[in-house]
Image 1 (cartoon, rainbow, N blue to C red):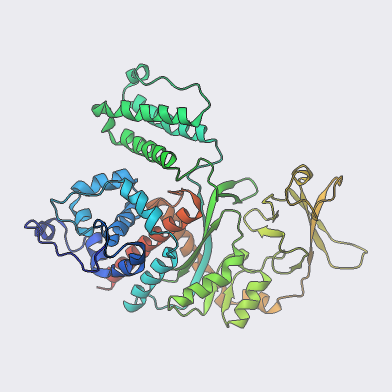
Image 2 (image 1 turned 180 degrees about the vertical axis):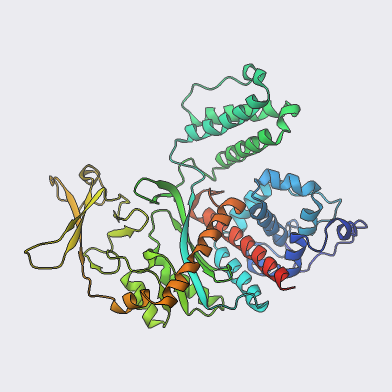
Length: 486
């Protein structure tokens, strides 16, 4: 049960915060900047208003998740720090002497209260609204790009993944005390996941009985990760092979297993829209959605800046229809080519190859000048026929017994003359130089907010992580720009 009325903190020690949490503290500034009551309004239908025990305020629970993203902490380390960090307690609206939550409450909050609430769009919209009200966003330009996040659970078996995490704990301990090797529980020889789980619990219990080791930060960090993984398996919330993660390609030689976040950002480096997808999705197809979501936040969009992935025909046509300048260099294959079965093959601009519906990358390409023949030049993309033979989508795509599988793109150099002309103007070149800003933003999301690896499993979990990480990044940016104005 939650109350519709805010509680009044009458602690005699509340004045401590005025001493230990200065005015320039980031968390104090966030509290003063944001009215978090919108969280209560959004989530109150997830609670009973007049029956049952009093629940922890959803605003406070959400703030815990925000702290987790701002400081890139595990649930256990987050709660532990909130016991003694007065800035955390101030931000959470907890009296200095009050108890904090149990870490398991965060798991339940994510699972039971944050499903189907459109948190990503809501938080971005709230932060952009603040930026517009404060006069932070003045430009009418957005920069678009996509960044990848590796799945928390990779393509290893459940047993292999648990083994890896328990091994990390042992290694951290051995670096402190080599003699501990002889004292650890005996490893299981079983192939059963439940036996590996039992061994992991034994490792946790053993290390915790060695306080001189368990309290060392390098060991504690690995131990907390192992605890969370074991809890996830026990609660059946996560799996070693993430059910929603997919293989994406960053180049011909580098792939990742996970998710993509397609981002739009204002010239002031405030993220105005985001779409979280599985890893294999192409960048260009989310152009229209990013523009429309940015406009829905209240921002005016006249110019969109992106790399060559966004110069698809559909995006150029949409830009002209919406009277938007598209600053994206034409790619001779994506923009000027004509091709069949566009729904079955997508161009991956990082690898410079087409990807089939099953996610397989073409292994080679050849330029066919068609000398002496009718028709325009074309590019032939060759796929691994051995993969085609066992592909679940082979019907209608691969002919049984065929020794090769090719996909042709015909080059038509006469199309999109207007875009090509714009591409050579000084205005285009000047605007294109600002694209580095979103690459820097993507880097900050990964390095400072833990966005390089998924914190939870599944697409819903990734959307939750994206929502809190982007909200935190936007608030920090707004505060920085407001401080610069003073």
